[in-house]
Length: 287
Ligand SMILES: O=c1ccn([C@H]2C[C@H](O)[C@@H](COP(=O)(O)OP(=O)(O)OP(=O)(O)O)O2)c(=O)[nH]1
Image 1: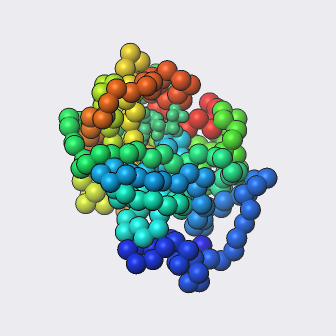
Image 2 (image 1 turned 45 degrees about the horizontal axis):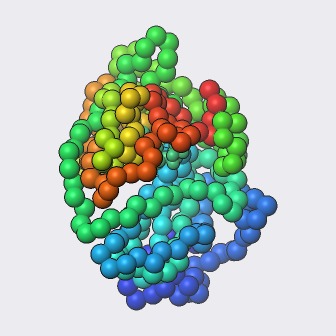
């Protein structure tokens, strides 16, 4: 695509595509490289037929956020990214823009997830999360993404050597300097536990601070951290000017929301990648 776009209430996605936004069409079958700095629009295999009263909210999977791949879902007549109103009936597209690593994608790769909500958001308990810059022993406190790294193949889990893509960060004085434009994986000081009856969403705290932004993915599954103490992994980008981040600085807020009913299987029960996590890179990397 020449650039990202939103259809708005009066247009379908096809109307927008026909208006000169498309630079080139590529086939994903057999694999295609999606390059950093470019914006791609991919039709999703799934569509929605929402009844009245049920709306949809989308967000990148945590594994997508940890790769610094920016994604947003749109539908026909969408007035906002990652949100479709109650009653939406139609196809879906995902906008994909790899920021740090180019990725090899194929049909069937899963980058985003959808949540269905009846009625308005019912925000419950809220917890402030702060950054942990005091690691035990010689362990790093975080990772900074290396530019000009090799390609990440989305279907090769645990197959990419972490040090080819990430530089470990140490903070002997409990601080690190965030470079504008660089991408960091950090962990929360607090343990996070999501009861089976809740899900939670992590939102940036005080976006007006400006010099950095924490959290790009931000969905926490019911049962995350239950019986397996876990931290939140924070996706942080430096912005505007170099910024000193200090141990214990508040960076994000976790807002719980009750699930509509009893869940089938708790996070951690079926091959979940991040249960009990500390400072954990995405599932594509091996230490
Ligand atoms: O910014 C975030 C978002 C999520 N999580 C944790 C909580 C969440 O429950 C878990 C898995 O998130 P998600 O379901 O989005 O990731 P996934 O890539 O689908 O992981 P899995 O394959 O384990 O389901 O990672 C974080 O630590 N930081």
